[in-house]
Image 1 (cartoon, helix red, strand yellow):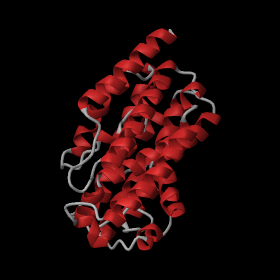
Image 2 (image 1 turned 90 degrees about the horizontal axis):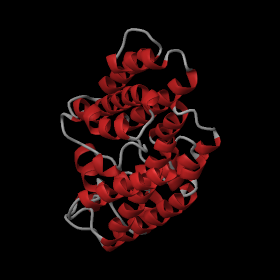
Image 3 (image 1 turned 60 degrees about the horizontal axis):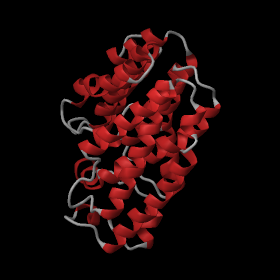
Length: 283
């Protein structure tokens, strides 16, 4: 999750094929050389499996069957080539492979059309869909397990912010709502409200409530850079925290149904430049 900002999410048909090129600049410039191969294999696995869960041409049964092929590949058997490639890179490391298996759990939830009655339900989904990515990055860099307790809130916040960006598209294209059902009901929000051209007052309040929780999570994740030993990964974590906070503030000011809210190129460039200067000073 540190190697990809929420602004980089891509819903196009070439998303899986572009996964490597999207993430390679960050992986090549910031992450430790020893980690680049495993990181790229992990991202290609994740993005390709995610495409299966989101494929509108497949029904639920076919999606689940395809995802089972990814599971088989992680076991080293015949299966999805991206999963076999990841198994080849990671070998028999059960801990690192467990992070990939957690992602498959989340993709199965997506394919099955899961809904989230409460915030706890949505956060539990994020423990499978987002948190394993941060923990994988920490593992391949040899970081202490304690850093994972700080990366989890950052990854959860990033996942939820990402879904707030794509609120309307997730509902219209995929039929999914990544907001707590009880919060929506309390404000009188109905599913069709997410298909409007602008937020209703009730949906605005739900989004602001969700952002309040995300901001708390980012505060919890604040000490993460100082808990990371590897300088490149620490730099990336610092930049990601800044961008996540910037995105949260933008989502408070703007209407994600009227127009997608994302970090500007200048904000991304500024975060990367600032992190690079900080890294140079650290050296």
